[in-house]
Length: 163
Image (cartoon, rainbow, N blue to C red; front, side, top):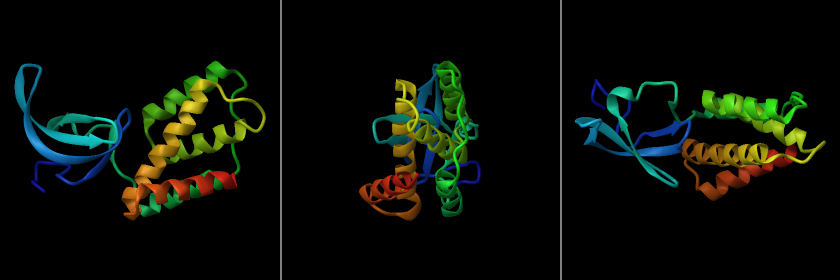
């Protein structure tokens, strides 16, 4: 890795909006009329270019390591916290957690939303959060443990079923 780069080709990263992706190359691309060095990042559903000079920001992080993943899995199995009664408050909280992007906070949110469904039907925002977090966990698990995505999905779903 070049000393001026925070990431390198082949690294797996997570973008709060785009999810898990792998850096495929470093390319010069036009950004606001100027050619700049960018990371070409391929995700499941998209390719995006991340300017190298903007790569060190709070919306992007490396895929979790095994220790953090185990901690998040323990959080999934822990006692859920009660969510707000008002759906607007719950939706705002969900958006806040996704903007934060913390893997552990996402695990806790998933646990709490799954517990909520025991008492009431989930709204569209809550259903979407469950789907997105579950898929993100599976993708990070697959990268972290170097296993096929199908195996990772099965492991995450088994953990969710324990809740």
